[in-house]
Length: 171
Image (cartoon, rainbow, N blue to C red):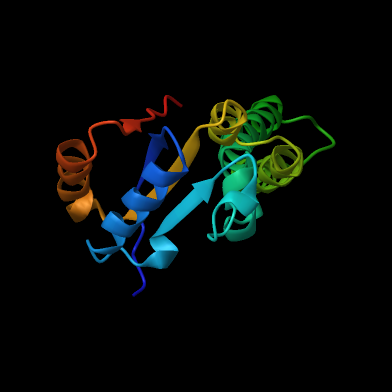
């Protein structure tokens, strides 16, 4: 079953047995095996894939947030340069209103490109925090689910697995 990912829950389990029990419980909620990822210090402890095997570079790095920030900053810079040149109207330059658009588009593309190059080399802050918890011996589960199932899954985990805690992401 392919899950349309709209929400990701981050769960912290105290040990291998509880993590395995929770994973099997989550599979009964029709999330599919591909909807549950695990992050452990020693991936040989469980027969499931380690998060780095199942997550792509776009989720484990800061590429997408960097790309968005770069595009916004680039758009503002390009617009400002285009507007400045348009307002100056130097005698030897024939600059029309279309130059503002051209500079803005160039700024978006250049800003997005350069920022994403930097973002690919920066680990995603969420995964850094999760890896720190994994170093302490905790087992971390990442559960991808449709937005409509979020309440059902959260209520299920809170009622059936009281020793499992939720990790809140503040970005």
